[in-house]
Length: 478
Ligand code: SF4
Image 1: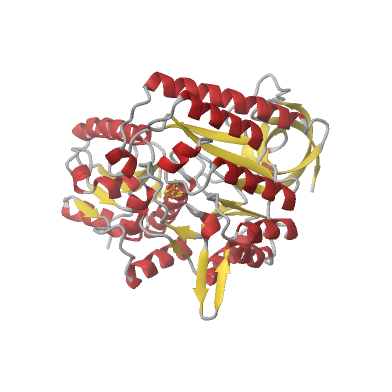
Image 2: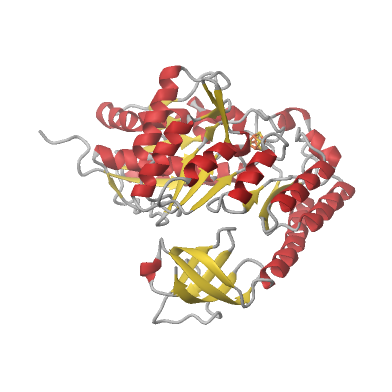
């Protein structure tokens, strides 16, 4: 008997954060395991899945415009199945099914059901939906077990999704989820409403997954969580925190580097984690610690539970315990009520913090969040834009200065593969393609070398620098 999904192909497009990239990789692995082929060409696809992000309005607008394009394609190909998965699916639920292009809506907690939803849709030619009804309720044991099984079965490929469409992977690297959800309720953030309560995965499941990844050649594992530094799991008498996970993962042969993102600025476990970083050679000296604002008034309105002064104390503590630590930040400009004075405080914080790099976003109200319900989005768009550019400019000068310190130094790099945007004026050599990789502290390094080095560690001597990139020459393979 012919299998009903053999010869069918799916295309998956991913928006948003590392959590989404990981989910995209899991879904892709599950569909391939079920017999689907993968394609990056919509003309060849029988099923198109969009893994969505709700964190910013702009990300949702891009999905809606993508769905508009698919609606147009479906006029000539009515059999094309379109599924929306991820945070936007959870946030909009039934409303998305009203869109002419959409056949399937599947929330982040329901991804283990994705193959079933697709086959039902194909067989019965009807719309299907599976989202969590009461998102702030703890999942049932069976739901948690289904997510765990899905994660450990499909979260073992030596790849992650690095591009928009295909899980082409970064050789030698993998994301591993440490936690799901968030309990923090920052007033601007949709995550607690679409990803549910904070739940830490069992350390045994995480470590087993990392061992299997190491067996497949993975060298760098990045542990993921919305507030990964608040990882906490109690088994019997013993309680585990992120520092314990780093220590256990460090003992796994084959794993050479361990990172974790994203951290929340708070004291709990902070010193233990820093100490683990200082003591464990495999724990990369890299910390992503979003501050969001340098104004205490705005931080309070955001329900961030620290002041700018306390945040800077955490950075000082981090640098005292791990002197060569590289710190990245996140900021939001144009939050309701942000005055020029508040913004100047943010600039001051960025200057004092000396981040290696910063991610800067313009505030956009997310429906259902406290900021949306209670605060007027009263900073004009052009002011948000100007503040974004100004802050980025301040950070770029700091990054350029920090990057210059690498000149003539040798750095160890984990090679990702060919550079997607070749830097033509940087000695690009046609006989040896331009490769890109990262140091343990997440600095981007570009140099010429054979593509076969993807997934390997090499040494490169830095010969030029810019605000975003270190340019070097390959010296030795390590
Ligand atoms: S810590 Fe705040 S910003 Fe981060 S996911 Fe949780 S609610 Fe959102």
